[in-house]
Amino acid sequence: MGDAQIWKLEDGGESNWQLQGNMKAQGRLCVITVCYENPLDKDWAVETWKSIFISPEQK
Image (cartoon, rainbow, N blue to C red):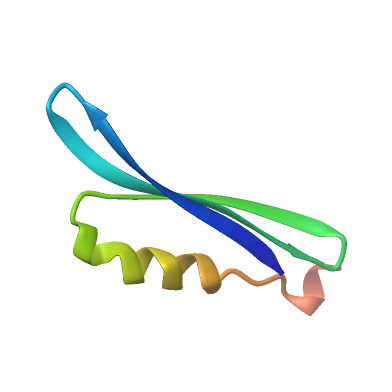
């Protein structure tokens, strides 16, 4: 269970994208930031965020 947002950032004529998200499980919270330059990498960033999990052994 979690949520994420994606923003386009521009600085000095350069732009990049940033995904900021979190995942909650078993009373724990993981926060992630994924930065990428090519908008075609959006699916990769989302899949990276979705891949976060809390191992049952880490209780």
